[in-house]
Length: 173
Image (cartoon, rainbow, N blue to C red):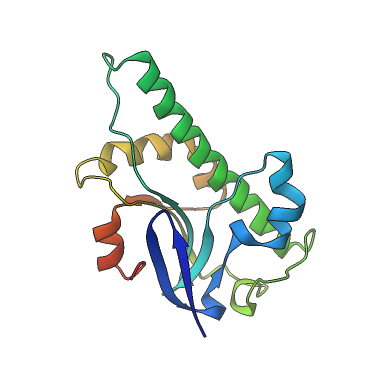
């Protein structure tokens, strides 16, 4: 049965059940961690020898400058902080599921096999309404904030794409 995930006004999928773990809706997250302020990305997708940690947002703020008003700067920083936490916490939760510190309920066999070393990990933010020129400088901010996680996990990419690019790459229908 194909999996379709409705998030931020987009339909992600159609994915095979064995390709996707809906982390944000998982029992491990909703019952134990979410009530205590732990954050989560929407889902983890295994496709084409890549393991994507996918976060979806309706919008993406424009890059700030030295003359950006304080209120917009605060919202921009809050947006970044929220996504950074989601990625950090999602990586940690997934690792702890693999370490069997949390149950693997709902995790497809493909995503809980003992050796996942051949999969490239990619952190992916899909910002539905982002204009094409916005993601480039924004990606650098996330790469800086997630520098340690990128090193520890040997992650080469934090990508931000908009709805059009996500559709072209087969993430959404």
